[in-house]
Image 1: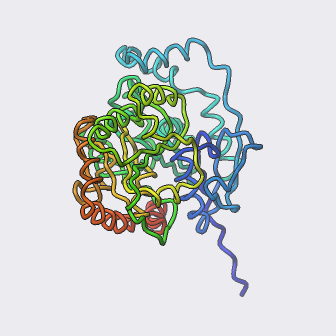
Image 2: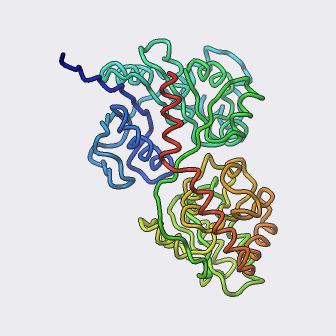
Image 3: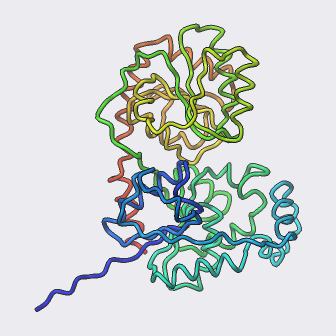
Length: 395
């Protein structure tokens, strides 16, 4: 008897772009590459095909890329309504379902998703991000595949921060998220928030760390490190305020912030204003972050919100302690006094005190670094992939 080879199921990730710098791109690359060992994996995005760079985050050659053209020509009325609602919530307050659907659901985008699913015979579609998730939910009953939404920021950032992300979109979220077969969030706190405030059941799957490092930082170099895009959410303005306070009491330790972004000049101006040019370095983007982390002794996370910051997983992996504001994203990552120090939200004075503690207490720094390395083992690609495979198998 000839044994018939069973065809692999097909998964497609729907995301905005894949070959730009960012935590979402990195984690999708890591997870998609691992899942490609078990499924035929596709990724739909709006990148220019000529920009493909699989080496950026080691995207597997087995991944099938689907490049789409961004839908253009949205009506000025729809654009104006979206902008108005994001700033004021006015369209949401009017409460007209037809108007809300008109504002947020573009038929051309819905048809694009349906076309990708049908043409590539996708068995499971995974929407990467809240906007992609409600779009996929809006067509879930029109496609012959299972549908999964995957959130990449905190509940507070998406739904409770005026002017940001999904502010003013309660109707859209409440209507279309439940149409998905699964919705994945990054930590248990956000899962609880969805249930308490929207009576909507989610599953929690943490992000995996993006690399394994056999080395551990020696924690002897007197240097703090931070990294990310220079945008409001990352709070680098708060970080400079905290470092100014720290620098008045400590003359030895310096700070390096890696990254680029629209807010870079504002941070430079603040550094100049405080006369910290010799204490704070801004080298731009770096493709040697493992080495940079190993040569540092503490990671500083000043973000106003995060989903599950990959940079913290990387810091834990090389065994450097973390100082962070008390945001929900840190709950599964750092316990106060164990792998680092957690301070009240956006209190720069307390943040500076935590920096001084790390800088002055060698024993505490070494102890936290060891605990950080141990904590990182909870977020291996293998462990996270097991959870994803379980969820996908349930579908």
